[in-house]
Image 1 (cartoon, rainbow, N blue to C red):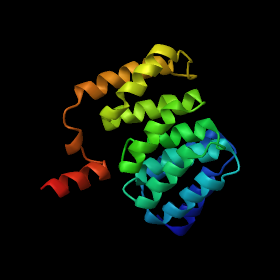
Image 2: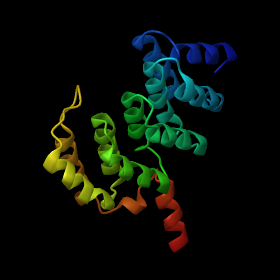
Image 3: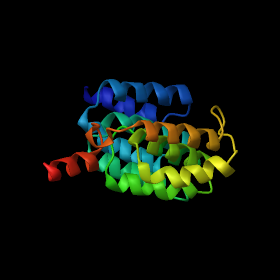
Length: 188
């Protein structure tokens, strides 16, 4: 990626229209130039609109092998003053790569006041096959019928997640979970 292309991508991520921002994010997914790490983190933390911050979180999913990117997404999920759309997008992005702190953070946020945050934390914990989430997910299944626009209820997501977790037997061997890979190495 040339310097000019890099500047165009960063400008697009911070653009005023959803189309412009997501077109820039698609470029990030195709070219994970390491020079994009800092501008993505900056946009996630300081983007002028929730749209830009959520698109940055989405685009960061392409760069999740980088510890600073994972840490920035975790911070966004846990920032109660941040827009729920941004927090949910950050939670969803963590399903691609994460660490032990990510598991703990998502578990904690299953009780968040925002239905979007609870929904995406549940989804991601399912992708992580996090067995410790089952009791909290069962509580959501029994009590949380709030619907996330464009999807379904938190209760349905909790039910789906419980099925995924119970069906998964190979979580510790999955690629992408830094915590799980580190634990595997320690046992070897």
